[in-house]
Amino acid sequence: MLFTIFGTPKKSTFTPSEKHLFHTMRNRLAILTLFLSAAAGLHAQSGRISIEQDPEIGKLLQIYTQSNSEADFYTIQVGFGNYSFAEELKGDVEQEFPKWTAKIVFDSPTYRVQVGRFRERLEAEREFAEVRKKFPGALLLRPGDREN
Image (tube, rainbow, N blue to C red; front, side):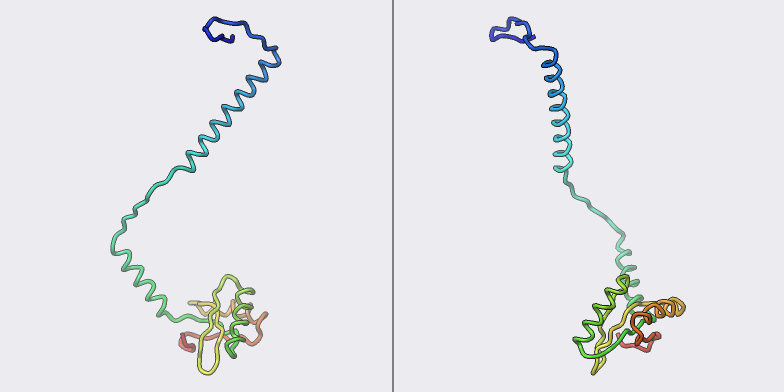
C-alpha cells in the first residue's frame, strides 16, 4: 500500500510485473549495498603490530652471519677479463643460472666472474658440470683458492 501526505492509505496501482521488478531491484540494491559496505570495511582496517623478541636472537643472527661469511665454499669461476667484459659475462651468467648470484671479484689486473657458494664438493662438481656446458672456460675453485 502507498500512503498519501496525510497518512491515509491509498490502494497500490502497480501491476504484478511492476511489483516483481520493484522487489528484484530492491533486493539487488540491498546486496550491492552490503557488498560495498563489506569492501569498504575491509579496505578501511588498519593496525599496528608489535613484535617482541628475545635479545639473544639478534646475537645468534650475528653469529650465523659471521660464520657464513668466514666459511669456505667451493665456487665456480666462469671467466675473467677487463671490467666491461666481466659485467657482460656476469649478466649472461645471471640469465643462464638465475638461482645463483654472480659476482665480480677484482684480482689485479683482471676482473673475475664467480658464481655459487657450495659447501660440499659433490654438489659443487655437479653444478660445475652444468656450468661448463654453457661456459667451457669455467673453473671450479676450492676453498682457499680464491679471493673474496
